Amino acid sequence: MSGMLDTGARLTADGGEELHITGLLGAGGQGEVYRVATAVGDKALKWYYPSCATQAQEEIVQELVARDFDDDRFLWPSAFVRGTRQDAFGYLMDIRPDRFKGLPALFRRQLRTTPRALLTAGLYMVEAYQALHSRGIAYRDISWGNIFFDPTTGDVLVCDNDNAVVEGDASGISGTMEFMAPELVRGESGARPGTQTDLHSLSVLLFMLLMNHHPLKGSQELAIRCLDEAAERKLYGRQPLFVFDPQDSSNAPDPVEQSTVLHTWGAAPDALKDLFTHNFTTGLRDPAARVRESQWRDALRAVLDSVVDCAHCGRQNMPQPEETTAGACWSCGKDLVLPPRLVLTTPPPRAERHVRLRRGARVHAHHLVPEPTRHDYSDATCVAELVEHPQKPGKFGLVNRSATAWTGTRSDGTTQHIEPGQTVPLRSGMELDLDGAQAVVEPK
Image (cartoon, rainbow, N blue to C red; front, side, top):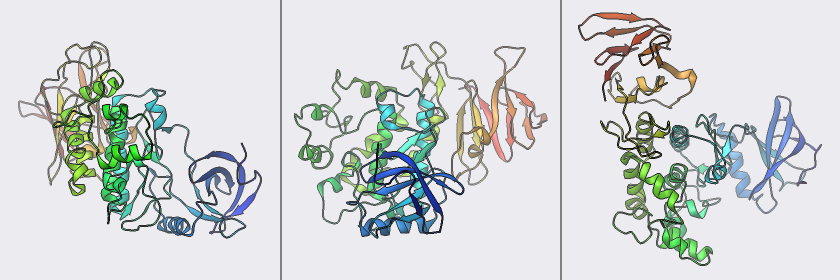
């Protein structure tokens, strides 16, 4: 596969960094991406097609590079690169690691993953875009094509960041139509891409990630003979209707052709259903009423911490957080048995966290603070882990994975210290002081 740049060609970034083209990685709607050798290792170079190498696009890229946005969830432009002609340019970025997969592979069921990994990916996505918005930057093109995730851990990586602009800037693109806010699709006077329209796009992306279906594609889409631009504008802009709108079932999913979303929706907890329903009913009509990133973050974290394994088939289920009964398993239909939960109360301003003590359950550093700047479910942040007694099957304890000692208070008022690496038996009513956060085991 040949591209605009020849293998072996040499370029120089604006900062003086020498680049050596070693191969073509791929191509997209705006340009091609090459692997380049640099003094600090291989990087990726996005090079714009002549039709996309506009003055406005150059200004956007130059501004993004100047921001020096250091966040490992984004493949951010790190250096501007100009070619031999004034109108030929691109930008340098890190190479996407192989463990990150595109969402189209998920939608085609080509990836093996779990509800926990998908919920984690959703939470990390929300926080990534929240970090961008908090710096006054609107992404403007949130879609399935610009985000990648690790199907094992849920880690995410946002790519194609060269359309992000300062909030209020009208230059550049408006987004991908099936993810665009209805007011943008309709072309309303005064409507422009920004953080408010990003919230709609983010909700569409979350729905597709968790439900494997578009929230506005129901029976009405199936009735369209030719899904041309006019039909899309009607579906996403002029007459958008949520497939699970509680007041209007005329766009409900077809039970045969669209059965997947009926099953995934049925397995979802109300904590998520309520937000999706609000966003795709009230939020379609009133942009100011759209679900905020903080609302998604809190709901996704609560559901993620409540995931339980079916004792019969082993499949992961998402019961409603804080419920004492969980109903039947979505996979085998047998009754779920809820394990005890650890209720954590953070230092002031006090916040409460509930972690279901399933096999291998963990408490992470973000559980112990009222407003974490970022959630992280990796091994590095684990402070407590549920383990089974090696000689007594069925007996569990909480091992101290932190660097500081805990204080435990038994029901009779006596106390004990749990040093790093030590395990405290899991007993109902046991109170623990985890570095300032209070934890107690509750039966259900």
